[in-house]
Length: 337
Image (cartoon, rainbow, N blue to C red; front, side, top):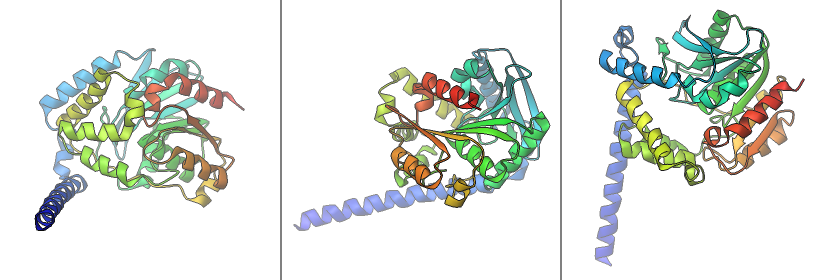
């Protein structure tokens, strides 16, 4: 009995020590992001770690951008938060459709969607100041108000202040939802795909995985992706595709400084009820960030005028696994009067 008690206490102390070490490292990482030296933002290679790694990263980005399936115009737009890179595709007279990618991504995440969407709409695929694209942030984002102001400035500079269709994925879905709630003027329709938080709080397990995924180690990135996407989604893509997710995350961690972002939050009941812009929320059946079923139930009870769709057989990776289904659903929703 004494031996078992000693073994248990030993394991408990080791676990506690590991937890403390992880917390210290995470706090140090948080401080380094939050209180970033302003001088580093004035270097020619910001937000990358060096000129050499910037050249390597941009070279790979440009190589991947050659897969863009339609003619496009690319430009940098100045905002008070920095230079924002925008890729514009589709007919000049088409209604604008602004696309916000997920956290750590880029406008290239919309590659599987552009051909279908830009056939009808004037798409604006944004490299967010919260992602790992070509945009260069110069002011730290503290909360959702900053993102709303950033989008306001961006839309004004692009000359698209009316009849805007806004679509966001994951973290970009949360940003789109915040814009919908706080600045609906000028919006035509909104689509939120697996939005971070927004409808329900992010689960503690998901947050734990996210914290581990911040560390620049391959095992940590793998642990994060397996928890975020889940076995249901990962079983539907090849081992090579799974490894590419990890490779891309590792390269981004190697090349880019940690990007200051705001923690996603829920839209409150009174805000949901006040939504007047036609809105569609799409969630995968096996979403790991929160329960898809409970999310749809809440919307049905609080704001039944907001459209919801659960995509069967997929989770947070729905935009990759079910792209054809989502393309069809989105186009149908946007075309309705």
